[in-house]
Length: 194
Ligand SMILES: C[S@@+](CC[C@H](N)C(=O)[O-])C[C@H]1O[C@@H](n2cnc3c(N)ncnc32)[C@H](O)[C@@H]1O
Image (cartoon, rainbow, N blue to C red; front, side):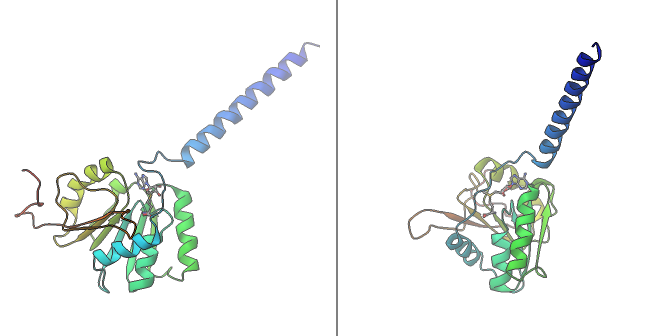
């Protein structure tokens, strides 16, 4: 008779342990994102690549690459190598599936990781659809790690007082895209107070 409460207690302890383990797994699998996943419309992807004047010798990196549409489009349209970085492993799996479907697995690579920790120095074109505060946090890395002349295109969000070289909007007046060119460090970024 006295065994029953012990069994119940044991079951409760095991249940609690499993629940906590479950939470730990979910927490590990869902990293804290700086930006939610919202895909760029294909019209805007095409316009971003056109504004950056992507050509056969470029290497494109998309920071926060979502389902991979920007690197995949660049590889398909221009035959170039491209990389996407995303913190969410679900997005990386989707991107690899999409690259397979589009037949560009030999040209694109998707890395799971934090965009702030990536080596972006090889990029000649950097694309992003992030948020204003994330763009601002990225600015020093852009200026220090990228070669002068590298083109940066951002969907929707500017980079504070750094004056863009060009901006465009879609046919409906939405989906603004900004273009900057990494300056010579001796000249410094246009519009930014020293
Ligand atoms: C607005 S979506 C843009 C997706 C894609 N670049 C596009 O334009 O269609 C932003 C992406 O950034 C990813 N992300 C958020 N925080 C991140 C971080 N710290 N490092 C890398 N990726 C991140 C999200 O998982 C999401 O897929």
